[in-house]
Length: 339
Ligand SMILES: [Zn+2]
Ligand SMILES: [Zn+2]
Image 1 (spheres, protein in one colour):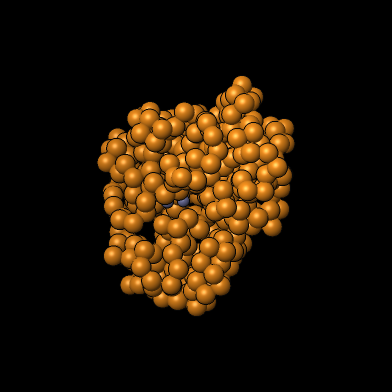
Image 2 (image 1 turned 45 degrees about the vertical axis):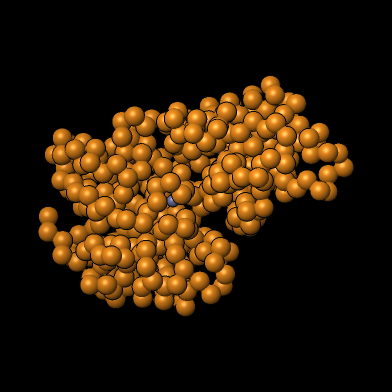
């Protein structure tokens, strides 16, 4: 199938000679953004097209002047950039995350962005859209990645908190998406205790609440204002922090903590060990190998393009199914930043 109106460039994928770009890495005139993770949503573009949740998260992170102009859309709301028709479809990755569905020249190309198929109570589920070309990520695009049902991991966490009630648990989570998903899943399991948070998680949690996602009792994980020594106060408590804070002096204020990490990479035992993680929780906001293949089947494209991740294995698997496939190898989508 011949498509000459989409090209890969330094900035990322460009449509119609730079009329607009998808998740561009460098500042451009028109940027269509899949979701607000920092590697996809960068400040400094002239005009941004995104879902309203993504726009709000970008404002919160980058300040009101993050771009000159923005236009926010609902899911499934059709819009045009010149003569190109587009709409956003849910991607199930984080709040506001979207696939970009482009209809032009009697061809449909869907950019999935980052996505997952597992249940997430904080965002709409991924909607498979039949397309001629499906542009997918492959962060966990190897057969070794088979994420367990996240509920089983939440149960492991609750059991560990109950078992080690004389210690505190500090769990490394990414500030956008993972933190809120874990909090909400704990709440849905009836775990209603106050959850303490590193300062960098507070803003995005508040924003999720503004969009109607009730996260229950949250408090900053401070030590100075506690009536008892932190040592005593945080016994049996759960603290969420960005992964970087786990190895930082910040975590040393809580004596004898159990360090956990919620990430798809926790499948790789060596990674957990390297980071000194006692409690690895395999909870990912990306599709695993099986879910990527299932999604390709449902989208039933003539061609698959892989943006980043384990491209070779996925291309091989597509070719075995007689689907044409190629790697875009886009540099700049850090598969490590928003796992
Ligand atoms: Zn992401
Ligand atoms: Zn990403």
